[in-house]
Amino acid sequence: MNYTHVNFLWDDAKAASLDPVGRLVYRSNLLGSDQRITNTGGGNTSSKLKENDPLTGESTEVLWVKGSGGDLRTSNRDNFSSLYQDKLIGLQQVYAAKANKGIKSEAEDAMVNMYFHTTFNLNPRASSIDTPLHSFLPGKHVDHMHPNAIIAIAASKNCEKLTQEIFGGDMAYVPWMRPGFELGLAMQEVARKQPAVKAIMMGQHGFISWDDNEKVCYTRTLDLIEKAAAYIEAKYAAKGGDATAFGGPKYAALAPEARATAFAAILPWLRGQVSQQKRFIGTVQDDEKILRFVNSKDAARLAELGTSCPDHFLRTKIKPLYIDWNPQSEDAATLKKKLAAGLDQYRKDYAAYYAACKRANSPAIRDANPTVVLIPGLGMIAWGKDKSESRVTAEFYNCAVEVMRGAEAIDTYISLPQQEAFDIEYWLLEEAKLQRMPAEKELARQSIVVIGAGSGIGKETAHRPPTSPTAPASAPCWTKSRSPTAASTASA
Ligand SMILES: [Zn+2]
Image (cartoon, rainbow, N blue to C red; front, side, top):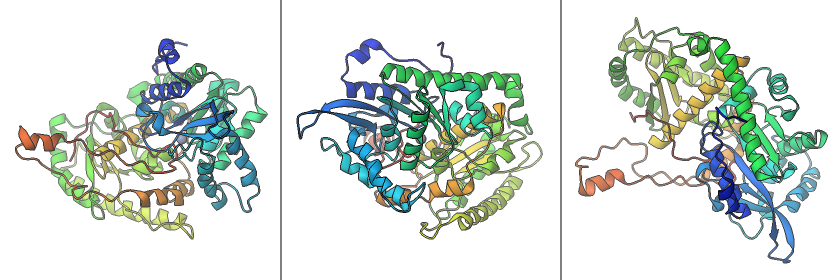
């Protein structure tokens, strides 16, 4: 296949020089290096390999699967957990014997701790919640990715029909299910019923594909993304392309100097407003792509729908704050007033969402302020606990915009139902992970100016790299973080 929407990077000589786990790491790094294949911290990979059991000396099948912590692009061996495949399959009996099991049940969540009992060779890496997906599918090699082009189909109203139309019989379909044991069982059932199929569209989420040959597995992953992207771009172009994206422009972008002046007028104040519970650092983005979205006729409607994919909305919150400000006829004072009213409404909406969706054992309501603010004429401000996190928030909303662009080009974009979003955001496993996070440093969440940073101590202080985020245990496919590569960012 000719690739125009992804980069084919597999090098046979390089792959041949590596051992089987090395080839899994290699494949993972290649996939993670292209943001069109998967987003920061998104997705996971696995290989089922023959290993000598240290207990018996006999050959046994071991599932090497990307665990929690780190990111595919930079993963090494240490980022993979190794688990006895037969013991993982055996857990299906353990689960079957449980009472009150089912999707999102306590019985299902309890299986996560059982993965530790299947550890091969004392590997300390905590397993991903996606482990059963990799174990229960028949392929020796499995890739689970979050490409914008595929999520655009996954977040389309007619996802199942489109999947059939675009991929023919090559891709099966499962509707949205929160990742875990039940999703693994559902995928196993699909693979049993349709043995010729080697990929599954995961509604509202992404896709998974597999093969017994690792290069074929890698190639299949790329082929399916390429096919999805080509289909979307053809429809997008036929509809008028950029000129008519998101219903066409409603407002025009301000000139760069005028944008800078407007941002300077609102940013310190806005940071104070969103930081009422916890301080935030902002990343401003005002490139052509984001301006096309915020300036469009459909931006208000699409922003209100919120983001679709769990790894997007955990950072971007369930929806961004869109301000209907006219950059051509209204001034900065009006913008401030509209922002204040918008923030007030946003917090009320967030409290209403919490009240409507909370369960008896849900954690307490979290910060009700938006982490993404969209302003026509100006662009986007994304918030996070530090500069790196705010850049990841920005990157994820860029992914969300790309997903909406694709979905609206081929169909109608739909977001995850609020209850499903809530059940991810307030998942007890997520809460437990937050509780395990190390305490923040003394100067965290502060904007810091280093005076005299031209040389000596000042320069060293300014250049000291941030400490890397600590890997949470048992993270699903969307919670790892890496330094973002997003361009055109600036801290506010
Ligand atoms: Zn995923």
